[in-house]
Amino acid sequence: RQQITPNDTLGNYADRPEYELEGTLFGGLNEQLSFLASARYKHGVGIFPQAIPYNPEFNFQGYLNYNISKSLKLRIGGFFGGWESSDYRSANMNTLESAQQALWSAPMRIDEQYARAKYNPYGAIYRHWPEQRRWTQVYGRFTHILNANAFYEFTLSYLRDKMDRSDRNNMLPDTLFSTRDDELMMIDRFLQQGYNQTWDKNSSKVYAMQGDYTNQVT
Image (cartoon, rainbow, N blue to C red):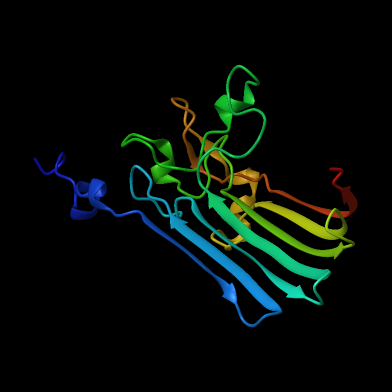
């Protein structure tokens, strides 16, 4: 009986709440200034408790409008958000139909009571570090109304995307990354010693400029 009776945390795993908060605020400060701000946060809950947070995500976006005059308008806005995933990574080989690597790159989550990863939660054979993504966007838009039928806009924008699959929280000392001490079981490929030695980081930036002219013909 002692062997099959779970402790309180594992026995009540289905009772853990999943929190999600969202809010929006908008309005006018005066005749010339108006704004909008919106934010969202969600902390997901995995199937079983685990050492790694399960898919927290957040985003914040908004803009500020300034009416320079009745015909000139300026908007400055942006977006910042991201998430950390202990599920499958965002790659093009997440199914066996596309690549054999999909079978090897299992998610960093504990999805059943016999999962090998629960004994080695920060890295196991053929597994990967949880993926962290951060997106940042800033833009400015200038609008000039020429008359009742025509206007033009000019927009400048900046977008950055950062991806990090590494031991960014320093969970493991550097000495554990030596492959010399890796020890693999004959059955089921369970890695008794050693951790995932693969890190993956990349960052991209996009600068854009756009101009539009609109003329309504009646």
